[in-house]
Length: 269
Image (cartoon, rainbow, N blue to C red; front, top):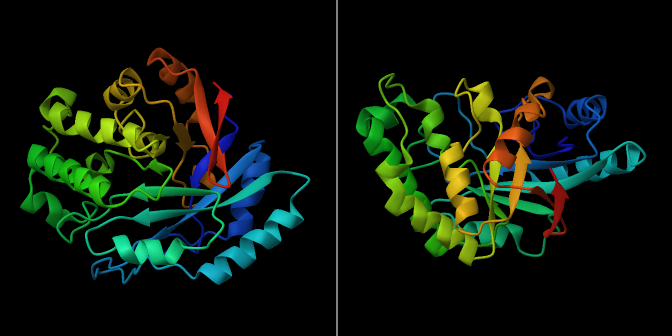
């Protein structure tokens, strides 16, 4: 049973309206043993119709989290993380932002490719289907060559959540050269990836990334694997976690990972 959710957003992230305390209370109801908030920081996020900037008020975030950490210390462990959006213009800004801060866990993620979020329809109009996937994976590879101050790379095939081509089918072999290079680079850096259960919520019938990516990561020697729901409201916390132990063990995994003070701990599935 998975009792740790290591990818959570509250109203300190631009795309959530949920109070941090409501998320903590839900985690206790779900009998989770620890949770890690990983609020968004996507510096230089492009202008959008919703007016979301994905910046983070770090002092307010930390103050709220540490207050709740103390309030609920007898019920659950609450950890402080961040999800850094990586693009060519943000590497140094991200380094400056996290320098000297005592995060427990850092996710590096790609949300923006060629100044577009694949969430927006324009991305797949510009880069249809397979091409859109390739551009996304190439951007991850580029980011990995420039920035490594993270613990896991988030939702490696995030882009697939928003592909509107109903005829598109993901096949690892179509991108195996790029994906193998990505996974080897992550492993060589001593970093990990996550199994993000939001794929189930988005109707994919699987986590992000695709099981073929998870399997290949394990085949190449990858061991660090965190579990996160990517929840932006209480009802999505630990989303379909019940599906993950059987899937992950079938792919060869025997443990999942949690972090505290940027140090990994392995928990038996």
